[in-house]
Each structure stands twice: as structure tokens, then as C-alpha cells.
Length: 341
Image 1: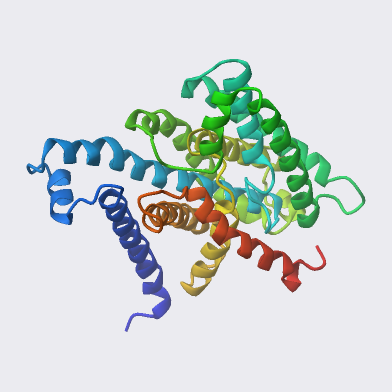
Image 2: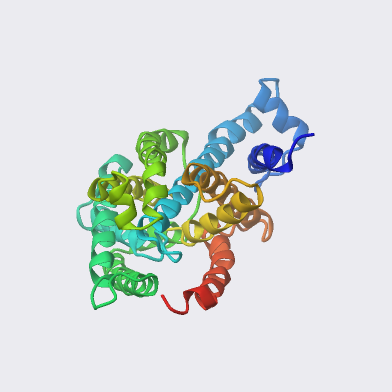
């Protein structure tokens, strides 16, 4: 007789794959124009479905779905790496100012330098994300207790507020930039072409490889710096690898879909709960994979929900995610376990 702990991980993987497939099909099938499921399947399988429908499916909805999967996975991975790297359960690219840094740098590139192409301002996004993370860490480590979770969260909120004010000051000087920024800053998967997805995939792939390769070191780091060093881990290289992964994943995702917050905060906690119930344990090789899959599901589900709850108007996915992540963040801060950090 098979022990439950042996089939639970397989069942969890099967459920996640099924969820991704179902959400992907719903994302392709739902939109402002109602297309019967039969015609959607015909367009996907190559059967005749009409030129207009095929164009909508392949030029609009498939790239949007692919972007949701890729960007969601990137934000989930970066959040999981950040929480492991800082041993901070409140760590998140949005809360710790990384997304705001990338957003401010993109606004500077577009509004001041006049750069309009994705390849032009994505490098600014990387630089802004890296600079913001360094500033937050330096502010959070001030004082005797060092970089505690609450201090880092407060430093991130302060840096995010400051960068948001500077971003507003820049866009208010350019009405056209303001119109573009208002839509982009809410976090949306809409109006993206297939070329955009292909453009960010190399950056996301390198960031994902760096994140997944750091899993064994993150397992050691969870035991404490002294234990990790005694196990032969070079802490400086581990942190550098983690920061590079976070910068690439967050910078590329934010450059395209905007600063979607809370995904990197919520998803790793859900992944830990699922891993515990599946008998996997706190192994970051599993946690990173779970975080990527769950975050892709969350962002895609938020995008689908935003399309259908207020038809014919769409609500941006970032707003839906904020409604979910806000209460979760408050509940996490109020937990007794965080009372003394």
C-alpha cells in the first residue's frame, strides 16, 4: 500500500498543472468579445474559425495569457528568494520598494530621456530595482537590532512612498506620460504584443535559473549565517546571486506589466503551507517551483476576474491582486510570531 506522503506531492503537481491549463484556457476564451468555446478550440487547433477570431486569439489573448504566466512566475520566484535571503516573512518586491524603484527609473527613462522602446527602458528598470533594494536594506539595518523584518518593511514603505512622490512629480510635467503611467501603474496585462513577451523572456529565464540554482544555498541560509558558512556556503556570493535574480525577475516583469504588489508576499506563504501538507517540507527547490506556479495562477486568475466582473470595462489585474494581498499583509503583520521581530 502506498504511503500518503508519497503520492501527495504528485497530486499537488497534478492539481497545479490542471489549474494552469484551466486558467490558461479561460484567459484565452474570455474577453470583451464573447467567442464560443468551440471557435476558441478551433482557432487553437488550426481548424477554420474565421480570420477575425483567429486574429483576436493569436494576436491578443494568447500573448496576454503567456505574459500573465511568465510575469506571475517571475514575481512569485523573486518574492520567495527575497523572503529566504532576508529571512523576512514580510519581504516582497512591492513592499520593499523594488517595484517602485523600477517604476521610477522607467518614468525617468520615458519622461526625461524620451526613451520609448522596451529594450531602451528595461535597463533602467533593472538599475532602479537594484538601487531601491540597496537603499531599503541600508535603512533597515540601522540601529542595534539590525535588519529585522518589521524595520525592513517600514523602510520599504518609506522608500516606496518617496519614489512614488518623485514619480508623480515627473509624470505631472508631461500629460501624455501621465495618461500612459496611470494605466501602467495599476498593473495590467492588456495591450501587449507577442514581441513584448519574447523580449523579456531572456531576462526572466536568466533570473529564474539564478533563483532555482540558489535553492540549496537558501536551504543552508535558513539555518543561520554561521551554520551556512560552516557548511561551506560563501554568503556574499549567495546574496549576490539572489539579488541578481530578484533584480532581473522584478525589473523585467515591472517594465512590462507595471508594479503589481503583494504577489511576492502572499504566494511563498501559501507555497509553504502546501509543501507542509504534501510532506515536502521547507525545501526551497520545491518552494521556488511552487511559488512560480501559484503566482502564475494568481496573476492569471486576477486578470480573468478583472475582465468579467465589470464588463464591458476591465479592472486591471494589479487592483484585483491588491484586494487579495492587502488583508493578507495586515493579517501577517498582526500574527503573534511577528510581535517580537
